Amino acid sequence: MSTHKLIYDTDPGVDDAMALVFQALHPDIELLGLTSVFGNATIETTTHNARFLAGRFAPGVPVARGAAAPLKRAAPQPLAWIHGDNGLGNIALGATEHAPLDARPAHRFIVDTVRAHPGEVTLLAVGPLTNLALALAEDPQIAPLVKQVVIMGGAFGTGGVLGNVTPAAEANILGDPDAADIVFGAAWPVAIVGLDVTERTIMSQDYLASIRDRGAAAGRFVWDVSRHYEAFHQQSAQLQGIYVHDSSAVAYVLAPHLYTTRSGPVRVLTDGIAVGQTIQKPSTMPVPAPDWDKRPDCQVCVGVDAPGMLALYESTICAKR
Image (cartoon, rainbow, N blue to C red; front, side, top):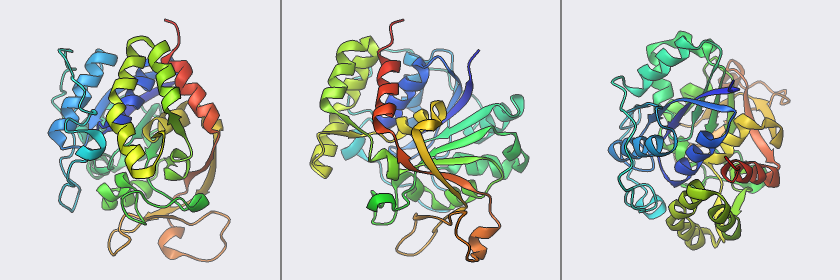
């Protein structure tokens, strides 16, 4: 019996795709559905990609189309220079049969699935958090029924790591800062896997080539889909490889012992030049902070066993089946 029942809330996205393969191949994960959201590309493209990915790697897993824009703002421009014009590194998608599209919008799919499996569902969110905020708005009582919410997003300044789209903000949180502040303040257990640990975890070109050579069709896909993404990293950060963003959130679900966390409530700035900034008040901080103090604690990842994370991904993709 699978240990983790997951809804994967995603804006595929190259790293989203690599994380989906990780989930689909790991024996301790049961994917209950994919919910698409705007972000790395338009909602039309991310939904198309989610259906392609589910059809190829997780047959029978439904996809529900989610939010096309943030709660209160215009949708951001697609990130073609990072993820390619098609969101998946410009690879040819071929004739893979796409997963069925659920008739419900993503937020209703989330509500219904959580209520069908009370206390069992992990929401794994690796894009803007609009769908989760809409689910809370429709049915606030689902929060205590969710097992946990694991988010790839944010940056908390650990070791000098700041935002990746502004000096203050990480892309997923900036995509819908109003939704993120709502999600971080809800009465469900939240773990945040941000740039503080994802930028310390790097898949080198040699690592990716090894997965290509030993991981059969899935390994070849991981290599192919990451070529455009790796070129972006080399140009933007002079990195010989790629940062491991979304797959780090999967690793946290499977092996939280690989991460060091800090507890305390988190707020998101929703206006000003630092919009999208994530700020935690650590539980060890004694000074009053009324805008934080009445909110639940979140677990923020501040340290990572990067070799352990990379070994977990590699062993999952390259396992003999």
